[in-house]
Image (cartoon, rainbow, N blue to C red; front, side):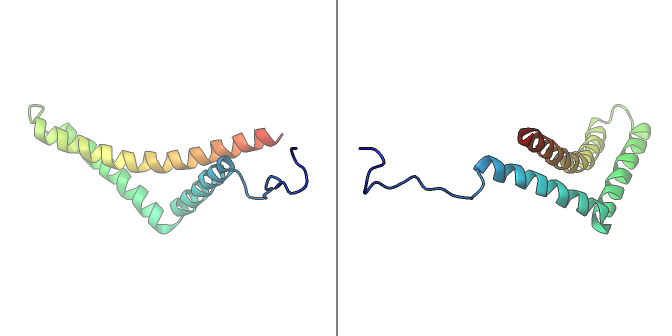
Amino acid sequence: MKGGIGSVPPTMTNEPSKELRETQKMIDLSFQVEAFLSGPVGQYLIKRSDEQIESALEEMKRVNPENATQIRALQHLIHVAEDIQYWLADAIQAGHNAAEEFINKEL
């Protein structure tokens, strides 16, 4: 007999689901990245990456168009600097998306 005397009831817990924990982590990371970027280290990294991109683009204007090695090296510098900014922006956007999705589920 189901649920009779001596049976163990299903455990009830107030712990959030795995999906909710992941959503909370994404939102928290977004806040942390925004705070980091507002601080001196974040501002420094963004400024340096912008300067690196600008410098490499200026150098690309002067490099011999037949010097593939130097062109690739400059492209690599640009990609690295852009990747850092994209990763940080992606973390922020993912958190905003997760928060919006959570709010829409709750409504």
